[in-house]
Length: 198
Image 1 (tube, rainbow, N blue to C red):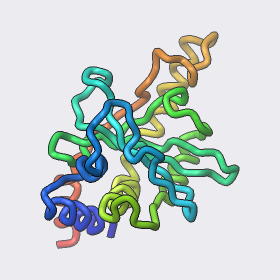
Image 2: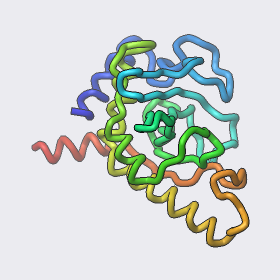
Image 3: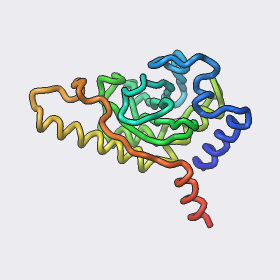
Image 4: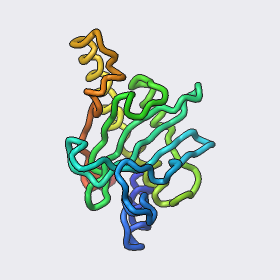
C-alpha cells in the first residue's frame, strides 16, 4: 500500500512536469538552509511534521538535491526528529540519514521510541501539496526497516563517541552532525515488491 501511494504521488507530480523536489519548493526560489514550506508541514491530528531544505554544496558528505526532515510529537508533546530523506538530482529518494540532537533540537528519544513514532507518521491533509504529503507519509512505511537500521546505528555511534570522549556531551558536540546514513533505491525496492507479489 505504501509503495502504491509513493508511485501514485510521483506520477501525479511528474505528470505536471515537476518532481518531488520542485513540488517541495512550490515555485519559491531555492535558498540554502531555508525551510520549504516556511512554517513546515504540520498535522495537528497525528503530530507529524516535515520540511524540505538543502545545505550549501559540500556541507554533507554526499551529493543531493536537498532533503526532507521528518518529525513526530511524542506523548509528552515533545517534537522528535525521526529521519532525513535525501533526494537525488532527479527528485527521487536516495538516502536515509540521522542527525545529532543539536542539529534539529526538540525532544531526544532513543532508537526504539523513534521507530515506534515513525510507524505512526502521516500527514492527513492536502496542504501545500497532496501528492507530496502522500509521498512523505508513505516513506516510513515502505522503508521502515531501513529507518530502524539508521536509528540504531545513530545510537551506537553516539554511544561509541561517549566511550571515547566521556568528558563531552555527545548530543551537543558540533563535531558530530550526521550520525548515520544508508543508501536506498526506490526502483530496487519496488522491483523486489513486484517480484514478491508475483
